[in-house]
Amino acid sequence: MNAFKQLGLEDHLVQAITDIGFETPSEVQEKTIPLLLDQDSDLVALAQTGTGKTAAFGFPMLQKIDINSRTTQGLILSPTRELCLQITNEMKLYGKHCKGLNVTAIYGGASITDQANQVKRGAQIIVATPGRMKDMISRRLVDISKIEYAVLDEADEMLNMGFFEDITEILSYTPKEKSTWLFSATMPKEVSLIAKKFMNSPTEVTVGHKNMGSKNVSHEYFLVGARDRYRALKRLADANPEIFSVIFCRTKRDTQKVAEQLIEDGYSAGALHGDLSQNQRDVVMKSFRAKQIQMLVATDVAARGIDVDDITHVINYQLPDEIETYTHRSGRTGRAGKSGISMVIVSKSEVRKIKSIERIIQKEFIKKEVPSGMEICEVQLKALANKIHDTEINHEIDPYLNDINTLFEDVTKDELIKKFFSVEFTRFFNYYKKSKDLNTQSNSSHDEGRSNDNSTRFFINIGSKDGYDWMKLKDFLRDTLQLNQDDVYKVDVKDSFAFFNTDVAHKDKVLEFFTDFKQDGRFINVEITEKKSRDRNRGGGGGRRSGGGGYGGGGRGRNDRSRNSGSRSDSRGRRSDSNSSGRSPRRSSDFKPSGGGDFSRARKSRRK
Image (cartoon, rainbow, N blue to C red):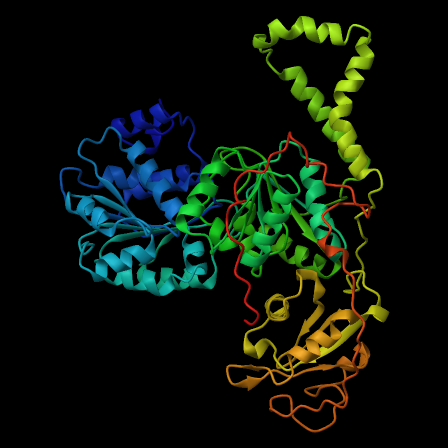
């Protein structure tokens, strides 16, 4: 007997499953389908992204609704347009033998009139993004007052994207006696709040442990100097010739910058972030799904809803602000039963966060070494050999073989092989022959490899009470001062104030910018501290000052500020791995950049 039939599904749905090619139910399907079929109750299902959750709620909904009715009976809310369309297509596949079934997708970026007309024709199931759904309800273009089943898919992602109020309002238009099924990868407090407010004693199903990562994903971290982050990224890509990856950055600015650097260095890369238009986003995703883009650089929000089964690696170029977000990132790989690798590039100050993530996902990270230049050359050479060995012969070249043989008649087989492979090997060898070791050793210091003699420590009168943690403050300073990601370091946030470091070369710029700088009508005061050891003894006070002026006040003494007129020549702009001027090994006719290159740079605002 078919394994899905044993779960209680009717023959026409089992036939659709057979047509699709499903053979064995996933764990979440095995646990939820019989439960949802047997009773009309609320459900909270916690399972990692990519474990088959759509089928887990899709088949029970299709079996329980009345296909002969034109009334909307099922509502599925999802965080993004991509996921909304994907769920809609899957529901149509599952219900291909359900005559008269109408599943309608409602999402932004498309004609609201066309979507309203589809609903009017009798949509038993609506799949929607919260924003467009709320809009259509307010215009009275859709009626969900009689639905029997409401699904919140990827609930934690929807709430992370700020849809709490939209979801609350949408559910207020639905009947109280409906069944609500909530599916989520993690269980933050906002999801618990939704469950308490709109669900009645829900049954909880957990696949693995709460917030736990996929069992098919291995987790690795690479410890490098803060300034070597991009070089490390390139080496990880070069060490995995068949890489098909999503690279996560925390901000739109960094996402665009890293993608542009990769494209300029000859990698097939593209950017995905909030400053792209929907059309640009669609072009990037189409190229990525077609594997014309091997490395998709994305923000967490923009990547939500990406569902591509063949992603080999997730690379955390920067760790996320929220630890739980790492679960979603790593869940982009290791899908559909395949294995995947989640890599994290960290500096010394971030190692402690690896331990926090390990506690959340209940998996241990493996510390790996960034490959050396010669290791990469070996990998690339072997990959080329395997590719040539497995290539199917194209006999269209037969007419040209005589000329080719004549050209090489004085060359032995060994010499020919060496010449052939030298074409690729020489590029990588020339690039990496003088490359340095990027690996650093972890210790208790948070100096990120910088010398105290070349560092200035500052006091700033904003802290955790103002909504800042160390990452948010670092981003604020970086964006406000137009510095690079790693130019601000040793960030230490207290209750009402904080400390941070920059290189001495940036000292004048920092002091100049925060002279009489206001945010929301309040002066933001930045001053130099004398010694780090004094930070611990300051209490609520600041560094030595003259001319009065409290930390929260508008006065600012300036006699205390020493100026340094020296300028710094930064090697950050160079894109080669070594200190030489050699070009990236990807810069050849064999590596054409595709996707992302036509998209405008992220807007850079001087102040937050």
